[in-house]
Image (cartoon, rainbow, N blue to C red; front, side, top):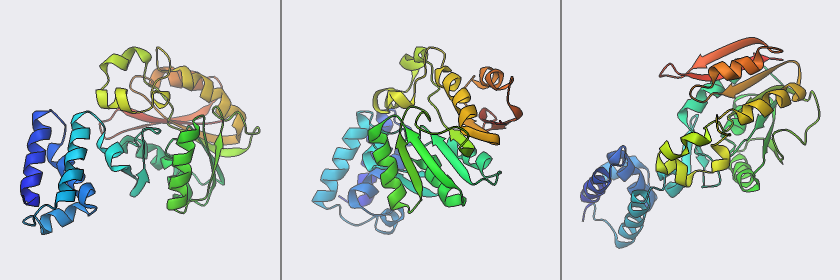
Length: 272
């Protein structure tokens, strides 16, 4: 069997199972099985598939058909032009979160705190894109291990700390606080794609019946942690703009909202 035939067969299996982007998924899984870039597949499309490659490729296809996200199979996800290691202990970084990075890069600051860091994608990206000293917290020790591993591999200087939100940190310590908090309502659990619901960490997804529970705790915590004039930047869930803006309105100023490419409000920022 040639690589081209293997791709075609994999694509058909994924298509018949209703998997999104079946051709791309087949390419990614086959490239992972061979340990080569996707471009190599096209340059060697007539090459015979080795038995070991077929064993790995078949296993990866089976895992994807069972609903395991491609990123957990390959162990990697690109974010802001860099590859991050991901496992089921951390949320898979989404392209939409890059808007949070863009919002943060508008400001020149010396200290940044990323709350709920997960894979470390936000903290590490900001550490590499700025000259700021970056601290990252998470309540999950397994998630922090992944974040620290990514930080080491990408040569980013980030301090990782296990705690609930920023509870282990002193008052008024940071120029900027950023976070992509859990914001999916528990009531939406049954309607989520099973790849997300059954495989990504619930701790990083769900936030009470209305999806606002973490925002309600995080916003006053950020006020405590920020220096006067410091900036808070948060990713928004669908439908959360109005209630989050209301939480900020009494004591925060310069509130700005950044939409994503679909013109959905995706990031909100405000000054302490």
